[in-house]
Length: 53
Image 1 (tube, helix red, strand yellow):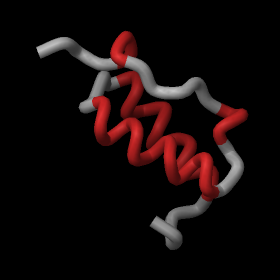
Image 2 (cartoon, helix red, strand yellow; image 1 turned 30 degrees about the vertical axis):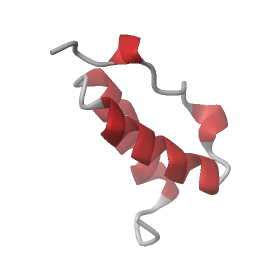
Image 3 (tube, one colour; image 1 turned 120 degrees about the vertical axis):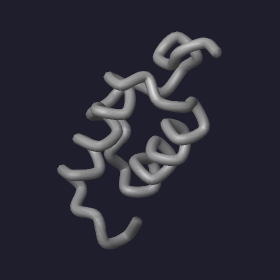
C-alpha cells in the first residue's frame, strides 16, 4: 500500500465505508491511515458502517 497516494487512500476508505464493504477490509485501510497519521480525516470503522450478513 506504500505506493498509493494519501489522497487516494482516504478516498478509497471513504468509498469503502459508503459501499458498506467488509469490516475487515475497512480496518485494513484504517490501519494504513493510522500508519500515515491520516486518521484525523476519517471516522474509524465500526460494525454500524458495514452491512450485517
